Amino acid sequence: MKAKERHMLKDYVSRIQDADLVLVGIGPELSAYELIDFKTEIQNEHYQKLLRMDEEDKDVIWMRQAYERHYLLNHSQVPYFKKLEEVLDQKDYFVITSNNDGLIFHSGLDKNRLTAPCGSGDFFQCKGPCSEQLYPAELGLEDLIRHYETTGKIEHLECPKCGAPLVYNIRTEDTKSTYIEGAYLNSWAAYTKWLQTTLNKKLFILELGEGFGVPGLFRWPFEKMAFYNEKAYMVRVNRTLYQIGEELKGKADAVKMDSKDFLEIER
Image (cartoon, rainbow, N blue to C red; front, side):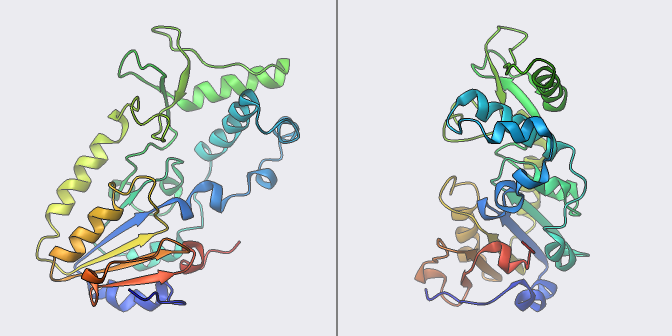
C-alpha cells in the first residue's frame, strides 16, 4: 500500500473524535532514548565522567544505565505526548507500549489506560530467576549511585535469596526467556477486558513507531483487528517500517514519517 508522506496527527482529529474507541500502540521511535538526550539532561559530574569511559565496558554501561534509569524514575510529567493527550481527552482509549523505559507513565495520559508488557524499569529481578520476587528499582539505584560517587567503584546488585545478579525487570531479546511478568499483569487484564468492548464498535487504531522487535504484542494484532472489525480504521506511522498489506486497502493508512514528527514533538 502506498505511503502517505506528510500526514500528521492533526489530520486525523476528526476520525478520532468520530470513533467510539481509540487504541494506541507506542513503539521504539517514541522511546526515552529517542526523545531524551541524557548526555545534556544529566549534568551530574560522575555521570559525565562515565560518558568519557570505554563505551563497550559492561560495568560502565551498567552504571550509566543506573543514572539514566534513576533519572527516568524521578522525572516529572513529560511534554512529549501532549498532542496525543489533547486528542484523546474525553475519549474512551487504551494505550499499549513495547517500550520498557516507563516514559509513557510520566505523561498526562490516564495511568489506568496504559499497559507496558515489556516492563517499565520500576523493578529489579533475579537474573536466574530463582523466584518470582520483584524488587523496587529506585532504592537499588540510589544505593548503586551513592556507592559509586563515594568510592569510585562500580558495584552490582545481588539477589537476596540466592546471590545471583539482579537485573532490570524488562523484556529484551536477551531476557525474554527469564523475564518475570508479574508487574504488568493487572494492566494487561484491564487492556484485554477493554479490547472485548471494541467488537462491532467504531474503532480508531493508531500505531506509532513500532517495528519487528515484538510484533506479536500489537503490530500484528492491530492489523488483525483492523481487518476483522468492519468499523475499524488503522493508521501506521513509521519512518521506515510503515508498510501495510493490500488486504487493508481502504481501511488503513501507511504514514512514512518519524512518529516524533507525526506528534509534532520539538527536538
